[in-house]
Length: 495
Image (tube, rainbow, N blue to C red):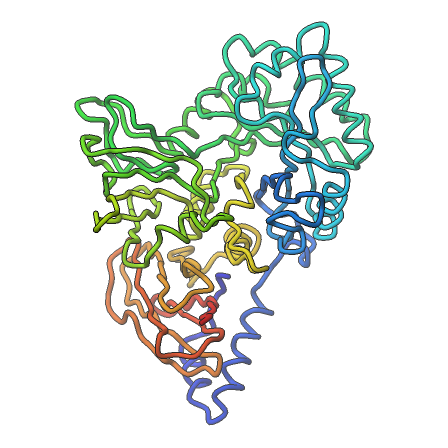
């Protein structure tokens, strides 16, 4: 949570009082109660949407899923998408392929609605293009639309998400026909008239033509790099290209900024556009750095989750704090893992709390509509704790600009990662103006136990590690001080 600070003199004088614990806790309470503005409590609509995909298979039959609804903080989202129905060639819909059940759906909708989040039913998914083509031909479109609308009405969804993949040129007419029919039919259902769509970075033309049918046009800006001829090692979801180009060409490496620019040039309104973040990433073996030649590349694995059932997720199998790097130009983190005995070198590109915060900053800067998160189960560490959702909530729904006079937003402190941690964690931050910066660690009693930075820094992104091996399990606070303004966050050391 980013919060404005009280003045430096009052902050230091409070910490100097004899009753240190009470003063420090009072300070935290004042900061939180005075400056935290959450849409649910401030009677205001969030400025940007946060739409999250929730795989129905994670719910199981409502009781045996890997990610039960009880472990999801739905107040982190404006919209949740139940993923997914699959179109059948005859216009009927398949609920079984992705594990959609009435019990799981009911629990999902009840939990999300209690947090004021909408729930949409998705139809489609990867490789669904051929099924959509058949279901939307002239002989089946009406029945297909009727079946979808009936499913929404019976199960009390708030709307539909169309995930037609891929949308090829020959699909433009049937895609438009489906979008128009669903848009018009949903308007007839009270409180269920929400229609969204997802698309690839190449679908700017059709989205420009059909944007008025949709509340959200969400671009899947992940898995943007491929190990093919003429390529180099690159991030799966970078905000910027860092000025880098393909070898020997004038074409820049892919970036979210370039995709958004292309959609806007095609005529898509910025406030209709959502960009994507995947709670996972891509593992390149045999290489270690972005912009590296593919000469030593052995293989590439896509859709590797942050956490997985079999402990092969990025945070379980690959992550070590000393492998982590932040690319300040591309605004994304990555792991650079050297070759070790019996293990190949790896470059791991993935979304974490820092990169999602960078995307949030980009969305605000560009005046975009919001973000899509794919897929909740990929980022779930298990055991009932899901700290990444709190980071997402902080980035979008708890966001409050940090100001000092007329300076405006000039720095960000990201949630530490991983969190909870044992015993080492990385703390990253950004400053936008030259400043004297301190980064301090406090225990819950308000005692400063470590200073990681106390120096003058130039604008840029920075990261420091804190090793809590000599400290007890519990809640700690880390404070970034930029000149006379402080930003504070919590972290949990769990041994």
